[in-house]
Image (cartoon, rainbow, N blue to C red; front, top):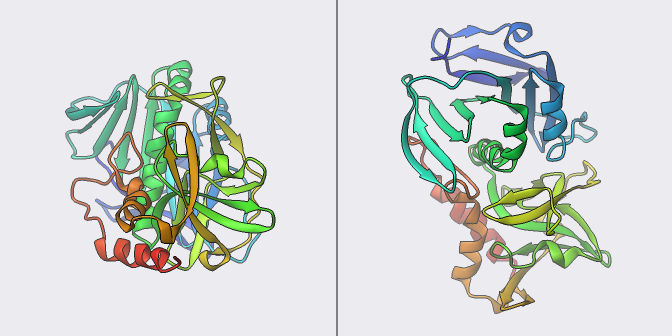
Length: 310
Protein backbone atom coordinates (compact mmCIF):
# COMPACT_ATOMS: atom_id res chain seq x y z
CA UNK A 1 0.00 0.00 0.00
CA UNK A 2 2.38 2.67 -1.26
CA UNK A 3 -0.27 5.36 -0.92
CA UNK A 4 -0.76 4.87 2.82
CA UNK A 5 -0.16 7.47 5.47
CA UNK A 6 0.18 6.45 9.11
CA UNK A 7 -0.58 7.77 12.56
CA UNK A 8 1.67 6.55 15.38
CA UNK A 9 0.58 6.92 19.00
CA UNK A 10 1.63 5.75 22.46
CA UNK A 11 -1.03 4.16 24.68
CA UNK A 12 -0.17 2.73 28.11
CA UNK A 13 3.48 2.60 27.08
CA UNK A 14 2.77 0.64 23.89
CA UNK A 15 3.23 1.87 20.34
CA UNK A 16 0.18 1.76 18.07
CA UNK A 17 0.14 2.36 14.30
CA UNK A 18 -3.02 3.09 12.31
CA UNK A 19 -3.52 3.42 8.59
CA UNK A 20 -5.06 6.88 8.17
CA UNK A 21 -6.86 6.03 4.92
CA UNK A 22 -8.83 3.03 6.12
CA UNK A 23 -8.63 3.94 9.83
CA UNK A 24 -7.43 0.48 10.76
CA UNK A 25 -4.75 -0.74 13.18
CA UNK A 26 -1.51 -2.14 11.75
CA UNK A 27 0.05 -5.43 12.82
CA UNK A 28 3.50 -4.33 13.96
CA UNK A 29 5.01 -7.77 13.41
CA UNK A 30 4.21 -7.43 9.71
CA UNK A 31 4.85 -3.69 9.52
CA UNK A 32 8.41 -3.66 10.88
CA UNK A 33 11.48 -5.21 9.26
CA UNK A 34 13.73 -7.92 10.73
CA UNK A 35 15.87 -5.58 12.83
CA UNK A 36 14.13 -2.94 14.98
CA UNK A 37 15.55 -0.75 17.73
CA UNK A 38 14.22 2.16 19.77
CA UNK A 39 15.82 5.44 20.69
CA UNK A 40 14.31 8.48 22.37
CA UNK A 41 14.73 12.19 22.94
CA UNK A 42 12.82 13.63 25.89
CA UNK A 43 9.17 12.46 25.49
CA UNK A 44 9.42 11.20 21.90
CA UNK A 45 10.22 7.57 21.10
CA UNK A 46 12.09 7.02 17.83
CA UNK A 47 11.97 3.60 16.15
CA UNK A 48 14.39 2.46 13.45
CA UNK A 49 13.44 -0.69 11.57
CA UNK A 50 15.80 -2.04 8.89
CA UNK A 51 16.20 -5.08 6.65
CA UNK A 52 19.97 -5.12 7.26
CA UNK A 53 21.64 -4.99 10.69
CA UNK A 54 24.50 -2.97 9.16
CA UNK A 55 22.09 -0.08 8.60
CA UNK A 56 21.39 0.20 12.32
CA UNK A 57 25.10 0.07 13.07
CA UNK A 58 25.64 3.07 10.79
CA UNK A 59 22.79 5.02 12.42
CA UNK A 60 23.97 4.20 15.94
CA UNK A 61 26.61 6.95 15.81
CA UNK A 62 23.76 9.49 15.89
CA UNK A 63 21.35 7.76 18.27
CA UNK A 64 21.59 5.75 21.47
CA UNK A 65 19.50 2.59 21.50
CA UNK A 66 18.57 2.26 25.14
CA UNK A 67 15.65 2.27 27.53
CA UNK A 68 14.48 5.29 29.48
CA UNK A 69 15.92 5.69 32.94
CA UNK A 70 14.22 8.89 33.97
CA UNK A 71 10.72 9.96 34.97
CA UNK A 72 9.77 11.31 31.55
CA UNK A 73 7.04 9.23 29.91
CA UNK A 74 6.87 8.90 26.13
CA UNK A 75 3.80 10.60 24.70
CA UNK A 76 4.65 10.47 20.98
CA UNK A 77 6.57 8.27 18.56
CA UNK A 78 7.85 8.27 15.01
CA UNK A 79 9.06 5.35 12.87
CA UNK A 80 11.81 5.21 10.26
CA UNK A 81 11.71 2.09 8.09
CA UNK A 82 14.85 1.48 6.04
CA UNK A 83 15.09 -1.14 3.31
CA UNK A 84 16.74 -1.98 0.02
CA UNK A 85 14.14 -1.28 -2.63
CA UNK A 86 13.86 -0.18 -6.22
CA UNK A 87 13.52 3.51 -7.02
CA UNK A 88 9.94 4.75 -6.40
CA UNK A 89 7.96 5.32 -9.56
CA UNK A 90 6.29 8.53 -10.68
CA UNK A 91 8.12 11.02 -8.48
CA UNK A 92 7.84 14.64 -9.60
CA UNK A 93 10.91 16.63 -8.51
CA UNK A 94 10.07 20.23 -7.55
CA UNK A 95 13.53 21.56 -6.64
CA UNK A 96 17.08 20.60 -5.71
CA UNK A 97 19.43 22.08 -3.11
CA UNK A 98 23.01 20.90 -2.53
CA UNK A 99 22.39 17.40 -3.84
CA UNK A 100 19.01 16.90 -2.17
CA UNK A 101 16.05 16.67 -4.55
CA UNK A 102 12.59 17.35 -3.20
CA UNK A 103 9.29 16.39 -4.79
CA UNK A 104 6.09 14.35 -4.49
CA UNK A 105 4.96 10.94 -5.65
CA UNK A 106 1.67 10.14 -7.35
CA UNK A 107 0.03 9.72 -3.92
CA UNK A 108 1.11 13.24 -2.87
CA UNK A 109 3.64 11.95 -0.36
CA UNK A 110 6.63 14.22 0.21
CA UNK A 111 9.74 12.59 -1.31
CA UNK A 112 13.42 13.43 -0.95
CA UNK A 113 16.07 11.92 -3.21
CA UNK A 114 19.77 11.80 -2.34
CA UNK A 115 21.71 9.91 -5.00
CA UNK A 116 19.91 6.51 -5.20
CA UNK A 117 18.37 6.89 -1.73
CA UNK A 118 14.74 7.94 -1.40
CA UNK A 119 13.02 9.27 1.71
CA UNK A 120 9.21 9.06 1.53
CA UNK A 121 7.26 10.87 4.25
CA UNK A 122 4.01 9.17 5.27
CA UNK A 123 3.10 11.40 8.21
CA UNK A 124 4.35 9.60 11.37
CA UNK A 125 6.19 6.95 9.34
CA UNK A 126 9.14 7.70 7.07
CA UNK A 127 10.25 5.07 4.55
CA UNK A 128 13.90 5.25 3.47
CA UNK A 129 14.96 3.10 0.51
CA UNK A 130 18.52 2.56 -0.64
CA UNK A 131 20.06 0.91 -3.70
CA UNK A 132 23.31 -0.24 -2.05
CA UNK A 133 24.68 -0.16 1.49
CA UNK A 134 27.72 1.73 0.22
CA UNK A 135 25.57 4.48 -1.30
CA UNK A 136 23.49 4.73 1.89
CA UNK A 137 26.64 5.04 4.00
CA UNK A 138 28.16 7.71 1.75
CA UNK A 139 25.10 9.93 1.95
CA UNK A 140 24.08 9.14 5.54
CA UNK A 141 25.06 12.64 6.80
CA UNK A 142 22.40 14.18 4.54
CA UNK A 143 19.91 11.39 5.23
CA UNK A 144 20.44 11.97 8.93
CA UNK A 145 19.59 15.65 8.42
CA UNK A 146 16.22 14.64 7.01
CA UNK A 147 15.65 12.19 9.87
CA UNK A 148 16.54 15.03 12.23
CA UNK A 149 14.13 17.31 10.38
CA UNK A 150 11.24 14.94 10.90
CA UNK A 151 12.05 14.68 14.61
CA UNK A 152 12.21 18.49 14.73
CA UNK A 153 8.72 18.61 13.29
CA UNK A 154 7.45 16.28 16.00
CA UNK A 155 8.93 18.49 18.69
CA UNK A 156 7.64 21.67 17.07
CA UNK A 157 4.06 20.45 17.12
CA UNK A 158 4.34 19.31 20.73
CA UNK A 159 5.34 22.82 21.80
CA UNK A 160 9.15 22.57 21.63
CA UNK A 161 11.30 24.84 19.48
CA UNK A 162 14.39 23.33 17.78
CA UNK A 163 17.23 25.70 18.67
CA UNK A 164 20.64 25.86 17.01
CA UNK A 165 23.10 25.67 19.89
CA UNK A 166 25.28 23.61 22.20
CA UNK A 167 24.66 22.89 25.88
CA UNK A 168 27.28 21.74 28.34
CA UNK A 169 29.28 22.36 31.48
CA UNK A 170 32.57 24.20 32.10
CA UNK A 171 34.04 24.53 35.61
CA UNK A 172 30.79 23.41 37.25
CA UNK A 173 28.73 26.04 35.38
CA UNK A 174 26.10 25.03 32.82
CA UNK A 175 26.07 26.98 29.55
CA UNK A 176 24.03 27.16 26.38
CA UNK A 177 26.08 28.63 23.55
CA UNK A 178 24.11 30.21 20.70
CA UNK A 179 25.57 31.41 17.43
CA UNK A 180 25.72 30.88 13.69
CA UNK A 181 27.13 27.75 12.06
CA UNK A 182 30.94 27.43 12.35
CA UNK A 183 31.04 30.13 15.05
CA UNK A 184 32.68 27.95 17.73
CA UNK A 185 29.74 26.75 19.85
CA UNK A 186 31.09 23.21 20.27
CA UNK A 187 34.66 24.44 20.74
CA UNK A 188 33.63 26.35 23.86
CA UNK A 189 33.42 23.03 25.70
CA UNK A 190 36.87 21.79 24.65
CA UNK A 191 37.88 21.67 28.32
CA UNK A 192 34.41 20.89 29.63
CA UNK A 193 31.55 18.48 29.03
CA UNK A 194 29.00 18.66 26.22
CA UNK A 195 25.46 17.60 27.13
CA UNK A 196 23.69 18.28 23.81
CA UNK A 197 24.99 19.55 20.48
CA UNK A 198 23.66 20.90 17.18
CA UNK A 199 19.93 20.85 17.99
CA UNK A 200 18.45 21.76 21.35
CA UNK A 201 14.74 21.44 22.11
CA UNK A 202 12.99 23.75 24.53
CA UNK A 203 9.42 24.66 25.40
CA UNK A 204 10.66 27.66 27.35
CA UNK A 205 11.13 25.58 30.48
CA UNK A 206 12.68 22.19 29.64
CA UNK A 207 15.81 21.54 27.59
CA UNK A 208 16.63 18.35 25.65
CA UNK A 209 18.83 17.28 22.74
CA UNK A 210 20.83 14.63 20.89
CA UNK A 211 23.46 12.28 22.29
CA UNK A 212 26.22 13.20 19.85
CA UNK A 213 28.51 16.13 19.15
CA UNK A 214 30.05 17.22 15.86
CA UNK A 215 33.57 18.61 15.86
CA UNK A 216 35.35 20.14 12.88
CA UNK A 217 38.07 17.69 11.97
CA UNK A 218 39.82 17.23 8.64
CA UNK A 219 39.96 13.51 9.36
CA UNK A 220 36.26 13.48 10.20
CA UNK A 221 33.76 10.84 9.19
CA UNK A 222 31.03 13.17 7.93
CA UNK A 223 31.13 15.50 4.94
CA UNK A 224 28.37 17.97 4.02
CA UNK A 225 28.95 20.74 1.47
CA UNK A 226 32.73 20.06 1.56
CA UNK A 227 32.80 20.58 5.34
CA UNK A 228 34.31 17.68 7.27
CA UNK A 229 33.10 16.91 10.77
CA UNK A 230 33.71 14.11 13.22
CA UNK A 231 30.73 12.63 15.05
CA UNK A 232 31.42 11.89 18.72
CA UNK A 233 28.96 9.99 20.92
CA UNK A 234 28.16 11.67 24.24
CA UNK A 235 27.77 10.04 27.61
CA UNK A 236 24.78 12.24 28.39
CA UNK A 237 22.66 11.04 31.27
CA UNK A 238 18.89 10.98 31.11
CA UNK A 239 18.29 13.56 33.81
CA UNK A 240 15.75 16.28 33.22
CA UNK A 241 17.16 19.71 32.41
CA UNK A 242 15.53 23.12 32.53
CA UNK A 243 16.76 26.31 30.87
CA UNK A 244 16.97 27.95 34.30
CA UNK A 245 19.93 25.66 35.00
CA UNK A 246 21.93 27.25 32.16
CA UNK A 247 23.64 30.53 31.45
CA UNK A 248 23.14 31.62 27.83
CA UNK A 249 26.05 33.13 25.89
CA UNK A 250 26.64 33.97 22.23
CA UNK A 251 29.52 32.79 20.02
CA UNK A 252 30.56 35.56 17.63
CA UNK A 253 33.27 34.68 15.15
CA UNK A 254 35.40 37.41 13.57
CA UNK A 255 37.97 36.20 11.07
CA UNK A 256 39.75 33.34 12.87
CA UNK A 257 38.82 34.33 16.42
CA UNK A 258 35.67 33.61 18.40
CA UNK A 259 34.41 35.87 21.18
CA UNK A 260 31.90 34.49 23.69
CA UNK A 261 29.57 37.30 24.68
CA UNK A 262 26.93 37.89 27.30
CA UNK A 263 23.54 38.10 25.56
CA UNK A 264 23.21 41.69 26.80
CA UNK A 265 26.07 42.68 24.48
CA UNK A 266 24.53 41.10 21.37
CA UNK A 267 22.04 42.60 18.96
CA UNK A 268 18.60 41.07 19.54
CA UNK A 269 18.10 40.41 15.83
CA UNK A 270 21.32 38.35 15.70
CA UNK A 271 20.21 36.29 18.68
CA UNK A 272 16.73 35.72 17.27
CA UNK A 273 18.14 34.76 13.87
CA UNK A 274 20.56 32.30 15.45
CA UNK A 275 17.91 30.68 17.63
CA UNK A 276 15.66 30.10 14.60
CA UNK A 277 18.39 28.80 12.29
CA UNK A 278 17.01 25.27 12.50
CA UNK A 279 13.85 26.37 10.74
CA UNK A 280 15.74 26.71 7.46
CA UNK A 281 14.84 24.45 4.56
CA UNK A 282 16.92 21.43 3.53
CA UNK A 283 19.70 20.60 3.45
CA UNK A 284 20.04 22.92 6.40
CA UNK A 285 18.25 22.22 9.62
CA UNK A 286 14.54 21.67 9.12
CA UNK A 287 11.73 20.89 6.71
CA UNK A 288 7.95 21.03 6.73
CA UNK A 289 5.43 19.54 4.39
CA UNK A 290 4.00 22.03 1.96
CA UNK A 291 0.77 22.37 3.94
CA UNK A 292 2.40 22.79 7.34
CA UNK A 293 2.37 26.16 9.06
CA UNK A 294 5.24 27.25 11.26
CA UNK A 295 3.73 28.15 14.68
CA UNK A 296 5.01 31.72 14.92
CA UNK A 297 3.44 32.36 18.33
CA UNK A 298 5.37 29.43 19.78
CA UNK A 299 8.60 30.71 18.26
CA UNK A 300 8.07 34.24 19.58
CA UNK A 301 7.18 32.96 23.05
CA UNK A 302 10.27 30.79 23.46
CA UNK A 303 12.61 33.30 21.84
CA UNK A 304 11.35 35.98 24.22
CA UNK A 305 11.92 33.70 27.22
CA UNK A 306 15.53 33.11 26.14
CA UNK A 307 16.08 36.82 25.47
CA UNK A 308 14.71 37.61 28.93
CA UNK A 309 17.70 35.74 30.36
CA UNK A 310 19.95 38.61 29.31
